[in-house]
Image (cartoon, rainbow, N blue to C red; front, side, top):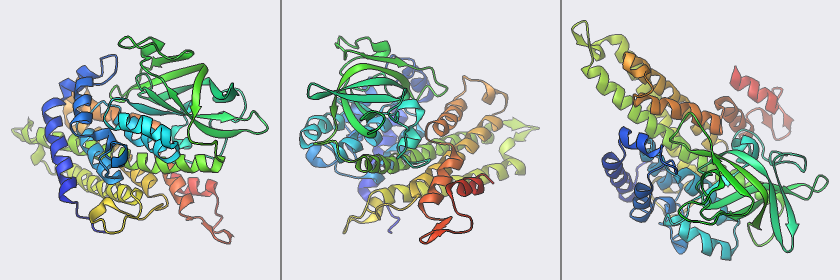
Amino acid sequence: MDAAFTEEQHEIRRTLRELLLKRCGPDSVKAAVRTPEGYDRELWGELAGRLGLPGLALPAAYGGVGCGPTELALACEETGRAVLPSPLIATAALAAPLILARGSARQRAALLPALACGELTGTLVVPGGQLATGLALTGPNDGDWAGGGRAGGIQARPVDGGWRLYGEAGQVLAGHTAEVLVVAAHAGGFTRSRTLLFVVRAGESGVAGGPRDGGAGVPGLLRTRQTVLDETRAQARLELRDVPAELLGEGAGTESEVTAALAATGVVAAAALAAEAVGAADAALARTVAHVKEREQFGRPIGSFQAVQHRLADLYVRLQAARSAAYYAAWSAGGAAAGTPGPGAGVPGEPGAAALALAQALETLRAVAAEAVQLHGGIGFTWEHEAHLYFKRAACDELLLGPVHRLRARAAEEAGLFTGAGGPERGGSQALASEAVDA
């Protein structure tokens, strides 16, 4: 592995950082999250059209930039630094990889170019707040997390050569505005139940199911933006009442193929979210360092006190370790690409690398955000202060794809840390792995 970034990768970071410094300050973020979409549509259009941000990891044949997970992670690090409210993670790290992996040639040609240029946004719909499970980040995704043929979840049934979806899902990232929904649902009833992926062209149906900008919406689809702690990460509740859908791919495929595609998408999403958390932690730490240099107590800056310096130095060490882990996870997610210099190419399927990197990044962001609130003093405890943008992001990201101890337990299980080829070793089991990580 060559840990040095290429000039192209450095340019992606520089360009994005300069743009976000001008267009995405704390006041702009707070204004954007209060719009119906939950983000600045004009800024998103510039990021997508000028920089091709949602298409960074998509092939050029489908209108993408032709890079990989490393470049996407670097972009997410910069958007995390600005705590940018946008549909980037939902579109580029969840919906687009699944369409690329499982979609038919017709579906790829119809959807991916529009997603790559920002004309459309997408997201992954997983019922019951089971996003981390569905992506195989906190446990195996071969269970009944999508409904299991029983009441609840999302059920799919064939109707007149097509499919209809019935059910509901909460905590759907950017679900109130996404025009392309990739829905994980169960088909086959109770006895022949299996998880399949479907595409719903949600068009312009907006908040609470109403049309947005004159769009007609989809019959039977009700979308309601939820109130969440982290307003920069908009989420929605979706209700599907016999919504027409299209099976993702040429054929249904086996359930193992679908779950494998979801797990592969989970690796990319975890690496991107880890890099985003590192960027947020870096910005929060930089703001805190700048504050303690200026804030005076007892006639001297509080940053001159050794206790404060030690606390900040410990955070810096944790941040650099989390950054290295996030970069490695993104490099590993890129797969083997012979002849590609730098961390844009890696080894495919490094067991647990993405989950471990995400766990470390989330812990680091939580620690940095907590110290930022503390070291800013009384003003840091007010909701209006920008320190709480990072604090809320840290809290909600772990709820979205955590908790941290389950991410580590899953990584230990994937790596065979507690089991050997011949069977259990050292009392090996998933339960033992969870207990060991908790301890």
